[in-house]
Amino acid sequence: MPELPEKKRELTMEQRLLLAFVLMFGVLLLSPYFLPKSEEQKQEEAKKGQQSQPKKDAPAATPAVAPAAAAAVPTVASVARKDAETPGNLVGSAEEHPTIETDLYKVRFSSRGAVVESWQLKKFKQGDGKTLDLVNPISLKHSEMYPFTIQFKDQKPNVDLRQALYVVKKRPDGLGIDFEYSQGGVTSRKSFVFTKANYLTDVTSIVTMNNASVGHLLSWRGGFGDSMVIKAHANQHTTRIGPNDSSPTVYDNSKGKSGPVLEGGTWNFAGLEDNYFAALFVAKNATYMEQETWSDKLPVIEGEKDEELYVGSSIGLGGAQNQFSLFVGPKDIEILRAVNPKLETVVDWGWFWFLAKPLFATLKWLTTNYIHSYGWAIIVATIVINILLLPIKLTSMKNMKQMSAMQPEIARVNEKYSGVKMNDPRNNEKNAEIMEVYKKFGVNPAGGCLPMFLPIPFLFAFYKVLSLAIDLRGAEWFWVSDLSQPETIAIRVLPLLMLGTQFWLQKMTPTASMDPNQAKMMMFMPLMMGFFFYGASSGLVLYWLTTNVVGIVQQYFFNKAAQAPAASTTIDVINNKKKGKK
Image (tube, rainbow, N blue to C red; front, side, top):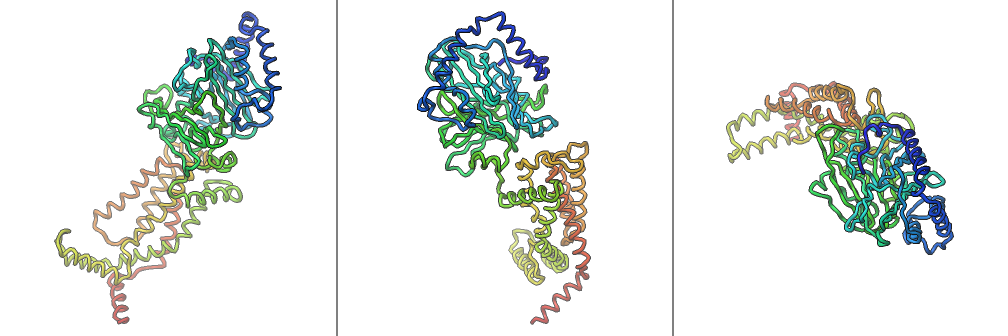
């Protein structure tokens, strides 16, 4: 499909449709050869005859479409039979750009190649604030990368269907569109049947050459999803799942780097996904399907030289006719489950799924019923988590106090064995005496590190929730425009606050005496955390910041309530207790 002039692409949709209609009207007046009246009459007669045929002539595999839409018009397969009975050319007179609009979609097509130029989800915004378009605009600069371009596996027809001008026929209910082309013995049909209020679309395609079927795939190349988010190309994958699989097979954008990878199998669905959205070709029952994974090298920003790999996928049923139920929409658990229980598996909760799933349910429940803000829900959930972990943290804090108190005895053992190297046999005696000191004070050597690691599993759970839960995409909180993304202001406030509270908490936390090098290393840790979190999602930073604030409050009251006596006094008390027991 040739590149459209830049000026033409700047026209509004209304202007483009008006121009297309003017061109078509002119062609009809000046060139009646293209659409002779007799041919129209034959087509109408063939349609009436086809509609009156008994059900046994219908194709064996029918897609899941709305009953009214399915009954209103003949299928692509029946149109193919009609065309075989009335051979002749069927070519569009000019390129058209029809639009189908439902409660959820606004999809713009091009009659050149019968492809999709824009697939907008009306209920979602993309990174630049405009209505989310799942088609990467940069990929449209490459003629082969329009979604639903026909791609041939082996035999190719003698006509370039990417450049072919299809005849466009909108369905009476406004929810379906048919594309028809026939010339030089090559016939091609594509149909898209939408439903008004859900994310399922019926897609059908067929290609014949000299009345012989031609196997083909339908391609969506050059990326998928919100291309405006940071590193969008790195979060796009091809995905598929079979009837016996517990999780999908997922390929990232590097899979086809050395060339497209074609695989086939009995699958429930196959398609494309990013973190929050998916375009999945769904079989009514597990069916043999073929998927080709591509890696398309495109600039990250239009006009720039720096390029990245964007994932692409081509899907087919392995034959000349493709009939799919196509899901294009958000990776919302309830929506996916209602379409097909297998679709729910595209939401991968990760290793800590047992924390991530209840965590998401808690955040959604708090936001829906009480707080009405995911930012505050994250804060409340974090406080509750830290309260539940308080008994373990108190034990660890006491352990750290005891470790501080026993340091003089540890220093005495180290002095006794000063100069002993690691490979010296006396080093075993040194370790044994140190362990005796730990036993005398009842201290677990690893217990002091526990508070540092307790929040980590919840950190990963929050990361998964913020990366996958469509509900948190675009969730606002004060100056934060999207909790699932880093702050968009010049200086990110939350990571700096997190860094400051991390230093404060570390300074308040009692630690066993250590050499200066160890102390410097420990003070370097907050800087590492700050560097890591500076590019993280705002919701994730908010979780860790809240954890630090709660930790500071808890540590303050613990330090006030547990004023430790001098180290030597503590040792004497413990020794006296030991003697008393004896």
